[in-house]
Length: 531
Image 1 (cartoon, rainbow, N blue to C red):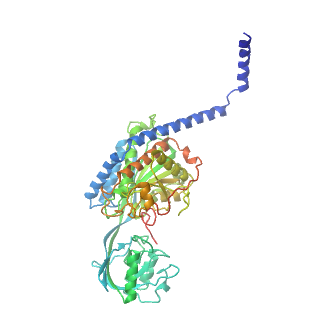
Image 2: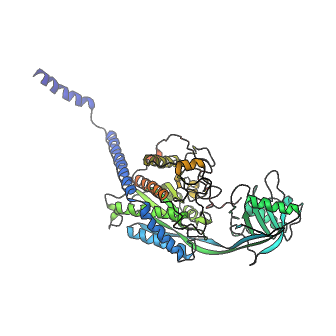
Image 3: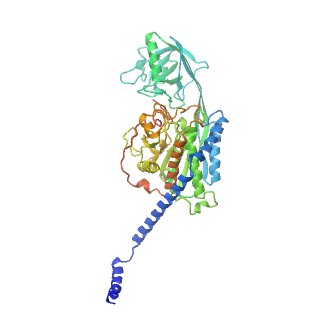
């Protein structure tokens, strides 16, 4: 009895010692509960989307893109019927799924190369592969036949950039042979034109082909194309040995056209906490663009449709449904990316500061199924210490979110540098955290990467990059599936919970380098190479 009495007396004392719960404590408790629920819902939705989304399902969209290209001249380039049909296909599926869908239209200069050929007429006949530079002037049909005049290579690497570089020779009526480096291609061809040259052939200063741009429709002064370092040095040797004559034909259609981005967002969700994901929808004019970038577009579309299903977007007043994401999720399929990120630049450039401030993260997926793939993650924190610096605050967390997920799934991965050469570029410039994945373009796979990813060393990640053969046969389903998992996991998590973007993460260098991605670098010319 004494013990019971003591206990009875002690209980009020304990309650009194604890004191009443303050409003602040209740608020903190409620906030914690809310955050816990958000994190739980995020994990649950991410798990469902990863399970439901697949390369197998997304492949049907690739088949549709191939059909569209086959019916429209073999490509889906911005400003063409093939692109318009691709945009309509994506738009209709998203509209039916319950998204708020819109076209974001803009004008641009459409470019289509009609001819690009070069042959050495003398001293010995041979053909040389040449790539017309974007916005070049055109030769007459049949080309120009003229002597070659090699511009001396300067020790400081500024060959052909200044008028003095042409002072020691005669260039009037000749084809100027100029080594890359020191200034833009536009400046080189303009200076050559001022010296009297009728065409400019610029040869690379490193391995690989030279696929560049003069930068804009008003830049072209004379027909200009790019060739390899080996071909350039061989031609320079011919000139030095007694002279060379070439026939160069470069013809390019350039005209003003209108195209569009496809933008789709959840009807509900907090607009002040918007997460965006994007892929460019256009191909180059050379081919159907099934890997570049039908793969990113199809993967994003598959996940978007699954998100709509899981969150009941198609139901009337679905944005009031209990499964509705807490945050607004916005998807973008960009147009005219292949001509210099034009769609993404237009979109970002036409948003107010307030609208840009609502976008808390942007994730980009470009070429996610290269046949000789690597699995590359954008280096948001610059932990690799290569190339460009870190992305805006939050980019490190986006990178870590992807790499942690890939580690759990057993996917090997490497870092790849932010260079601004895909659609994440305008978002980074606007201070928006960015991230994403990529599987390689023209870059060559190393022996070490074969040990990690499989495939073939000494061969490009995508041998059909920007070519006619970028078709349904040019896909790695394994890489496609892995990257669709990444997209699904990101969508599911960030649809409910953005707190991971503000949590500190460790600084962990990867094994990536400037060339590991093989693209979105010198060789992945979505932000076209200008010098």
